[in-house]
Amino acid sequence: MMADQQPMASVSAPPASVTRSALAGLELEAEAGDAWAQFRLGEILEEGRGVAADVTRAIACYRQAAMQNHTEAQLALGVIYALGEVVARDYAQAFVWFSQAAAQGHQVASELRALVLRELDPTAREAADLEAWRLQAAL
Image 1: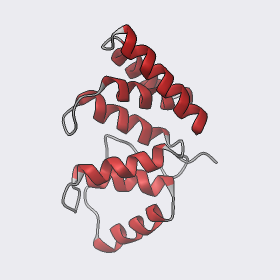
Image 2: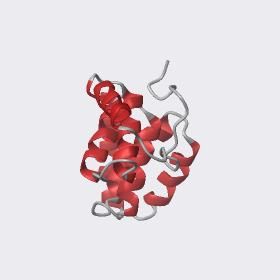
Image 3: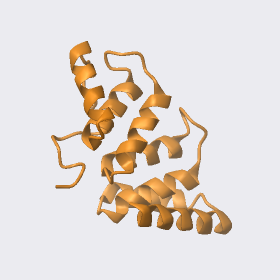
Image 4: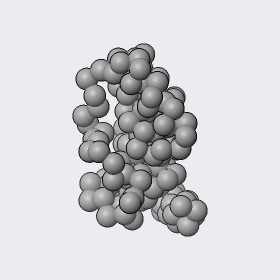
């Protein structure tokens, strides 16, 4: 089973709120390396649903899940870097993360990858493509 084949989760639809006990359980699962829990915790922390928003921790959670090939976490990281609302806009990093999700067949990631690619000059494109390739090889 792939890391993201747990219960349905969506970057755009985080839970309305979360209880302390549910959050504690999710944190334990995330710390134990569960990619789905890491992704969900990232959503909760990014949106501040029932807890104080903590984008730095959210990105760390997404990254942990993304490194386990969780496509929605990879998509979330790409969106964060492409929008540049909570971190500095970084089209190269967005390209890298969209590429990882696209490599697993994520159609939206593939379309977003094409959009951010247009924003990169040829040298940046080559560097981002190399980084995406290296990351894919590591996963």
